[in-house]
Amino acid sequence: MNNKNILVLIRLSMAWIMLWAFMDKLWGLGFGTTVANSWLQGHSPTSGFLKSSAGPLAGVFQGMVGNPIVDWLFMLGLLLIGLALLLGIGVRIAGGAGALMMLLMWASHFPPSQNPLIDDHIIYLLIFILLAKNAEGIGRIGIWWAGQKLVKKYPILK
Image (tube, rainbow, N blue to C red; front, side, top):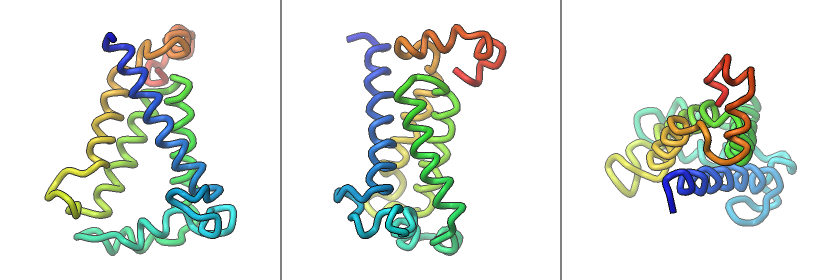
């Protein structure tokens, strides 16, 4: 298996992680979120995570609990990052946005409980950076997208 194929598998895996989190929080599929705690039932998709914030920035993140703007930004982030990675379109922007989301999630629980510095959010952050740096030509749609006039004019859209 060559490096491009591995990058495609990583991109699609991260797309699934983001889209699954979106769907589970929206509908409460019973994995991370119950139906009663789903967004469609009026529950904040960020409240459980933000309420458990710890460390020096805990007050900042706990102050965001129940904020509809934070909920909408989070859910749109999951959906749009997931779709961009799935389609291979806008992977640079999705990678940057995903890295920022993971950095914020890591900072909300710093230091991590299982390790003094690194947790899964940092690993995901590094994967998002890898995808953003290697966005051009990851998969057939990505190759087609990179050839479009708008994308050639504004390479950040790759």
